[in-house]
Image 1 (tube, helix red, strand yellow):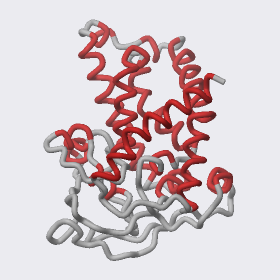
Image 2: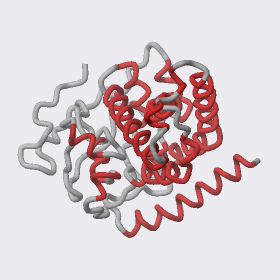
Image 3: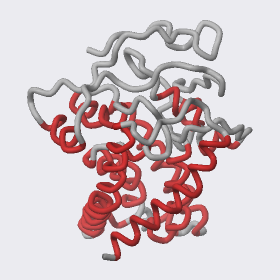
Length: 281
């Protein structure tokens, strides 16, 4: 019962924050209540909060404890000698880097893309669509983000409020909003940056660091299309039910997410960074 209360509280909190924001600062036309995709994303939200998050946390906890009993999990002595704030910074920075490269791998390797394509199947982005994610994709992403902390002997439970803030910000970058964030978008991420990552292109090549865009700058994958750029969203994934989205990537016959070739060259910039996009193999 406590899980249901927590799910309801999360829905009320996120709705209270993002529904007014999306109405007051809408970047695109919003979805109507009768839109089937809205109901689908509501099921993803419920599945994530009622079931999959708990399983993910349990598996990560088990993995952390198992790793702690090995030489790899003993931690790094120089890090342990640092002030707590420095330990947090190191764990977060390294976690952001590992998530960045894992995210790039999801767009590079077919077996990972099959899972990740579920997230990119959303053709309308808003705070609810942020929860459209295959549970295995979510588990692997969480593992990538927490592995450096585990190897350094750092326990993320000590910074739970910070992690909650990051989780809410992850919803914001998917939200249907146009809000100027100034220099903060380089550190925390911004909707226009991540929405470009969801553009319907033959191959996604930009903005993999959802919550740390400076990493995209360092590795040459950053692109800011500007808040007023308009382009189609989504991947070429057949319409499916909630259960269909969960099962299809696991079936051998599935060919998920070969994105349609739509010309988005030059969107938001002169010459555009996607002029040489190649079709996904």
